[in-house]
Length: 281
Ligand code: HXC
Ligand code: NAP
Image 1 (cartoon, rainbow, N blue to C red):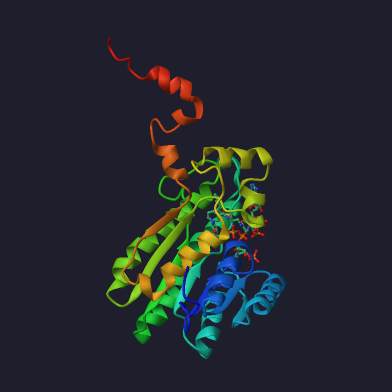
Image 2: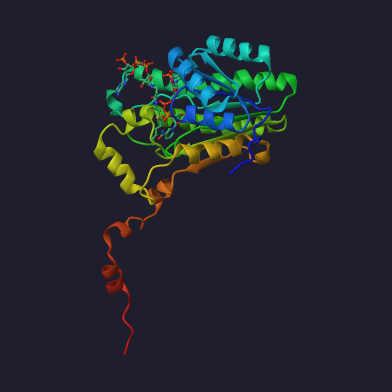
């Protein structure tokens, strides 16, 4: 789909890059010539991922343990990266989430998800953004949101609140920083099987079946689809795209919005024939 040097010379930090979609993006960006930094809380997971991706691609990959909730830790990580060379791209991918009844959430449960998703994204974005502005360098931020951010969703309210904030940040800073060469975009994926997400938000087979059934394509997204879109949005070829949230969900979001969208599930061909007005003889 892309030439193999699409991201050559690009230096990219992916938060939460040790697993799931972050790891998949790291793999794809390495294949396309980027030098990649991955961070997360678990050092061993990061080291194993870095070793695996280096073996697969022979690309330049660095693993940095960092909890994005902690501003000092984020500043130290960004300082250490900048000490070597400046970043071109930040991917805010780290997240925490689980399904729960909202009235049962403890204050720590709220803090935990808001801390990772909203504050972690702000910490990383500002740490990179301030440096890019100071140095008059171009920069690109891509954040991974979720389809429910603009409308909310029952049972994942801390995540919905946080992702809505991430999208507001994306659109706001696209304008505030756009005149100084910084692009801000986001991807809102529908369900893509990863151990981290599915074990927490679709933990039972019947929940997976429900998600498949309500999707017009009756399938989940793939990491390949996600990583190709991500590569496009961070590469120079998309440099006029700023402040966008690109939904990638097979049409699932719109399925829920259309008044008559569910008719296809219950009406058979015979039903449709019988609903047609008969020609008058
Ligand atoms: C209610 C819960 C809970 C649950 C944790 N808590 N899980 N409350 N229901 N299922 C509460 C705990 O009881 C605790 O509060 C507080 O949250 C913090 O929990 P800890 O385990 O101490 O926190 P921590 O170790 O920091 O872990 C953070 C985490 C965890 C968010 C809870 O799940 C995590 O590490 N997640 C990272 C990966 C992840 O979530 N990936 C999925 C992303 S998928 P108390 O008061 O008891 O101390 C996604 C989009 C999916 O974002 C969309 C699909 C379409
Ligand atoms: P995942 O594998 O659980 O990825 C989450 C990553 O975030 C993990 O590597 C985790 O590593 C890291 N992380 C969590 N807390 C952190 C912290 N405080 N500091 C630094 N890193 C932290 O799940 P995923 O499915 O790949 O999700 C990736 C992104 O896609 C998330 O933003 C998620 O909201 C979004 N998304 C996923 C789906 C889907 O269906 N998969 C759908 C919509 C949106 P550590 O635990 O080692 O810190």
